[in-house]
Image (cartoon, rainbow, N blue to C red; front, side, top):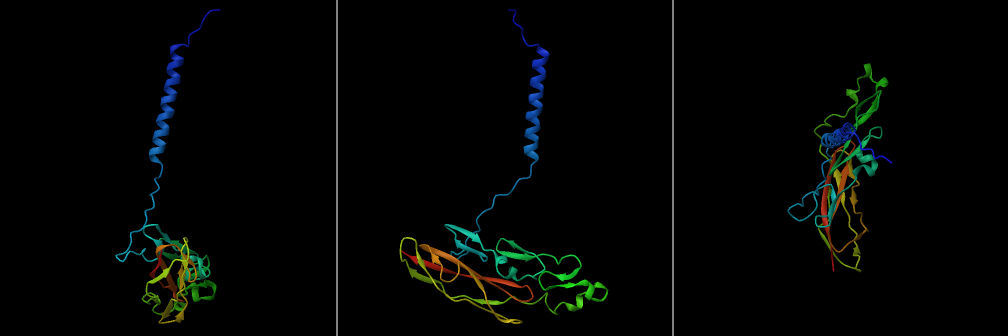
Length: 204
């Protein structure tokens, strides 16, 4: 049986197509958007995670989700958007005026759709609540997995008076051996948010 060899022009064509496909893949990978790698936030000078983060710098600081409680203090018609260390309030929905921090008002109920007069005076310069956290706590470990710790944090606002802060981890949670940052935050009716933190240390 006679043997047939592949014509040179076919071999060259196959090689050429292969090179084109490889080059296209390289260019596609080079032009793809690069997602930046998230880096752990640096510890503060007292060895705590920064405001808006809980956990510990050596084991990892974790962003707390302010939006998980009372829509982050945003208006109920606006979306709360969690951001590293804080949150932002989205815009009011269509046919509503105002902003997601102070309030969203039905534009049909405002003169010529202008709801400016319904916005509280001084909301732009208003201060967030003042949070009072307990001093750093130290508790003895109840076992290899740590110990529970209870504490009380309070918040006072010039406009709303006494408001209830949220803390993560919450009071009564089990804390691991070592130092853990507890992050507390509070908001007022003007959408102002403030965070404060303290440490719970579980000794071995």
